[in-house]
Length: 165
Ligand code: DLZ
Image (tube, rainbow, N blue to C red):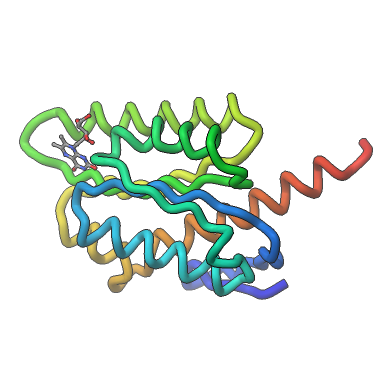
């Protein structure tokens, strides 16, 4: 087990991810941010032992499409978990609210209906700078955190599936 520092005050243990397979679906909207999230997630997965050939990476037009993209990934690959990455920036209309509601509900539903974890790696910010700060900027990279969460959830799933209660 290695440790990763996700914030100033917490050290998390990261299970060995060798042999784990992951899907990553990222949104094309706000590409400066979502590509950085995707690159951060890939780097972290590789760092903890995932093989590049065990990564399935696809893009969808916007964050609203992450739910279906995640479902297609789960149905058509042998991924152990799917990481959903997007960035919704508040604008002048209520579109922000509808997209955020849709993807949050959609991701929750995927988690409950499929036997694998779907990780919510969507930034919902007031402006572009807040997003950039969280996509490899001064506040870290939420793509890294999503990858870490995915590894932990696959390890938990394997542990509980193998245990006799
Ligand atoms: C339409 C739209 C708007 C206004 N803003 C964003 C955004 O900030 N981030 C994002 O990922 N997608 C946005 N979209 C596109 C929607 O997610 C979706 O692709 C369209 O509504 C088509 O379903």
